[in-house]
Image 1: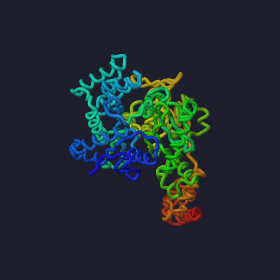
Image 2: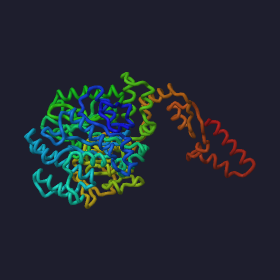
Image 3: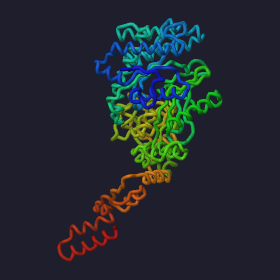
Image 4: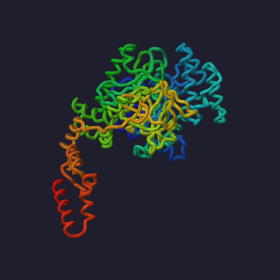
Length: 579
C-alpha cells in the first residue's frame, strides 16, 4: 500500500491521510501557487510505525528514499552535491495542533555542503547560522537534548559553535552527529512520528477532543531561506483579523529571518504593512495570492510565507483560529460577500463561541481610574483579572491566575489552559502563545517588552512598579493594555450582529427549541435568542429574591386556619401575576 505521496497526488479531500498541512499543500499545487516542492509521508505510515514497536519498516524506508530521488529531480538539486538540496521535515496532523509537534529545518547539511553553499552564496554568516540551526534543532527534536545545553557556548564564531554543538551531541548521545542525508532523514521522520505522542500533544488533544488514533503525517519540503539576504524574510498572516474579524490582511513579518523565529516568538516581528514600503511588488503578490486562497478554501486563512531573494513562496495554509467575536463576524461577512451560504456560516461558528460572546469587558467608569502598567499587542480578545504567575506548572484555575512569561512554548500548554489570561514579553500576534490562546478563547497580550521578569525573586518590573508573584493585574486582549490591580467586569450585551445570526439559525432550523426559564428576566433573554416557548420552569426560583422570598416563607411558617388561608391567597395572587 502506498504510504508516500507527491504534492500532485493529493488534495484537501485527503486530509485524513495526508494531514492538514500536506493536504493543503497538495491543494495549493493544484491551483499553481508558488510553493516549494515536497513529499508527504501519510498518517497510515505513522500508525504502522507505532504498531511496529516504533520502527520504520524496510518497505517504508525504501519508499521514502525513492520519493526523495523524485524530489531531487523536480527541484534540480541533489542532497550533498555541488548544487545541494536542503529540506524541512514537519509534522502535519489531520486536525490543526499549532506548536504541539515538531519541526526540523535545514536538513541535509554537513561540512562539505556548508563549503558548497559558501561557494554559491559568498555569505559566511548565512551558511553557518543555517548549519548551526540545523545541528541544534536536530539534536533537540531527534534526540531530546535540552536546548539550554546550547545557550552558553564558549566558541564565539559560528563555525566553531557548530563543532562545539556536535561535541555536545556526542557527549549526550554517545554517538557522532549523523553526516549522511539518508540517516538524517530517517531519524528525523521517526522523531516527528514520536512527537505525535509527546506530553503537550496528548494534552492538547485531550483539551480539544481530538482523536488519539489519527496519527500525524510528515511533510518533507525543499528549504527556502528567509534569512538569505536583506531581500528575504518570513512571515505569518491571516486573511482577516483573527481577533476582530475585520476584512483586512493581518500579519507580521521578519526580514532576513527564518520561519521558526516568528512562530516560536523568539523575535518580536514587524507589522505586515512593512512590506508595502520595503517590497511593494511582493506585498501586492502576497495579498492577491492569499485572497485567492481564502476564496478557494471558503474560509479565513492562516498563511505562512517566505521571501527568498525577492521571490515569494507560500509554505502552508490552514483555516485560521479565531476569537468568538471574529468567528461570528467572519462567517456573516463571507455570506454577505457571496462566498458561503447561511447554512455554512452557522456550521462555521462553534456553539461554545456563542457562550464566549456573552463574556464581558471592563467597566468603563473603573477603567478611567485604573493605573495603566504597559501596553503590548492585542493578540486574543477578551479580558481577564488574576494573580501574576511566572511558571506555567504552578498555575491553578481556582486562584484565577494570569500567566506572565518571557515567551510561551508548547510545554506551557497546561498552564495556559488553566490561566485566566496570558501575557508574554516577546512574540507577536502570530506567535505560539497568541495562536493557542485564540484557539482556547483566552485573553492574550504579547510583545510587552517594557516588562522585566526576575525569575529568581519571582517579581516583574514595569516602569516604577515592581510586582511580585501573586499580585493582581487586569489584562485586556481587546486593546493590549495591562492594568495594576483588579478592575470590575461588565457583562456583554446581546449585539445586533448576534441577533441577526441567531435569526438565520431560526430561519433554517428543523427542530423547535424551548427555553429553561425560571424568572421573567430569563424569559426575556430566551425570547431574544429565538426560543419558541418555555420547556422547563422551576417556579420556586421566582421567590429567591429578597423582596419575594417572604411570600413563600409566610405560607410555610403560618399556622393552619385563617392565617394559612391568607398566606396561600397572597401566594396564588402573586403567582398569577407572574404568569
